[in-house]
Length: 254
Image 1: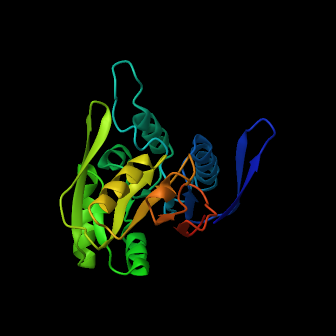
Image 2: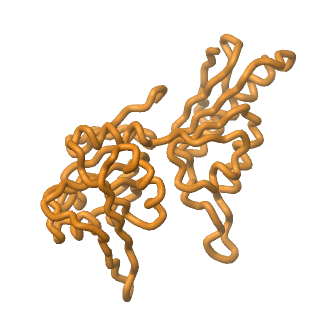
Image 3: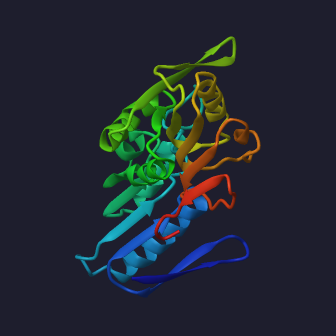
């Protein structure tokens, strides 16, 4: 299957199918334009395959936009992930694969969906560092990090963050003295939470602290993070990063 995309000066996106057959669209999915581009391709493909009942259409989303908005946080606010998933469902793909979704809500809201595990990328970071202690940054990340630790036969240290009088207080439940640590999580917006956790780990004697996130936004740069984190590992699911402070594992199709 081959297609081409055009973008007009006013921002309109249009698609044309060049060659028929099964379709597998791979997008970052971190913008509404990405979703509209996928929808344009799928609409053109549907028209070409109206009489072909055996053709399969797959969509891979590497970084689902709105995935943290997985509930209505306050009265009167929109449920953004629900809106996004409804749009995806209306494309009617036979399979929608999502890399390391923030929560299971995304998979529950999207028809024919499945999770792409981030284990392969964590394993690469783990091996490059040389068997560090894995650290889960909060209760929400503990289950998936525990599963990875079991597969790698690695030590795991849970941590948790609470706010007291507005200030973050981090508790670390394990011995990290003299050890190298790898914090594992799904995404980083600014990354200040990881900065505070790295500081707490080093106060308890950690020799070095590394960070792995699948979806690397880092909207405020790395200057502040470099004060406490020794190196960052991530994929290019959200964007390409050119910085010696970051090792980025590249995804097929991006």
